[in-house]
Length: 118
Image (tube, rainbow, N blue to C red; front, top):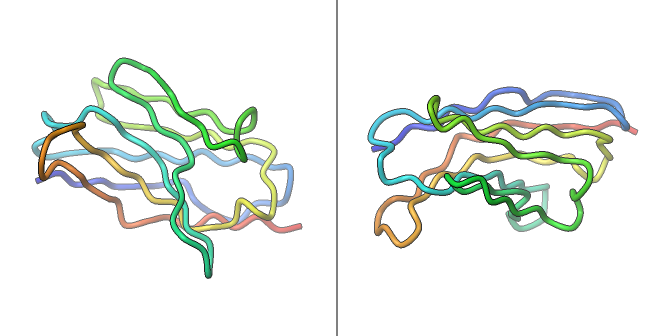
């Protein structure tokens, strides 16, 4: 089993910044990719950004140029630096860790609230 512990959410004004962290512990050997999803009220959960163990990244179009995902493999920790935040970024942000092609290796954090006021 893998445990994911998120931190760094909060309330910020539009244009501000926040940094989310997600630390993985336990049987992490199966994990290859880590990422951040978000879910706003009344909307489906969406992938925001992801990073592989090799450093390849993916960003949703809505956050390109504003968000940066990074990873410390030695600490099994993934970060999401969020700049120029907009009210539409308000959501619960969830950390995900998975092993590509590894059955049963798909884990989620508890979620952290990010609220951007206008």
